[in-house]
Length: 251
Image (cartoon, rainbow, N blue to C red; front, top):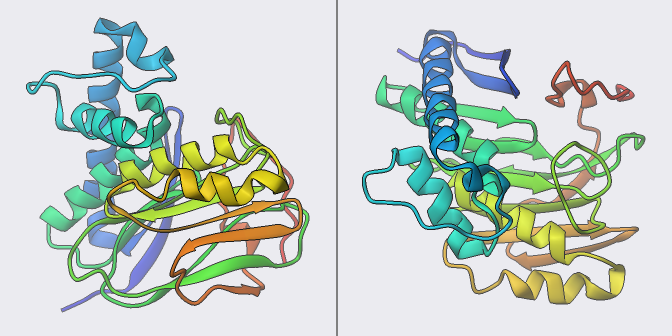
């Protein structure tokens, strides 16, 4: 019997996440994220370049699964492996919950979301912390597969971006790829004039389902973005780490 879906906010070191699933799966989702973080930290101790590189890096076949996923995503998107770290950690949490029997679980790791869905959900895209409404997409059930929808911004947030997009959002077959591709898209969005070429630059990455980017007051779209609307999404649901407070008006 399916239980009630709950929303739980957790902080594990630098990771600030919102876990949306049945309460009985929350602890194993946290366990999955904690293990992934440990794999990454231990790997960085041996390879400092993994933390600092802005270019793809190879990794050995015997590297931990989270590391291999990050390197694979970085290679496809043409970015450093840490560009996929939030998506990879969220992926590990959802995957652990699924292993325990969850059929519906979302982990929002600071705007980078891993999800497996057994019912439709609406996901808001934070592109302006002062706006009273946000773009949102409607996502269908994923048939047991873990997918990713991740956003990069050159306007706010503490992650590195070399572009000026308010939001560069990608949905992909896996969360690490979505995160890496969103970073690549955000880096390429340096002006409104470059919006179309930026979207074109990621169009050949295998595994991307769709993407959108917002620069100034213009939005560009790649692929079929499902149920794109502009509406009131409660910004109190935005996942922000307590170390990086921002003032977000609640609509």
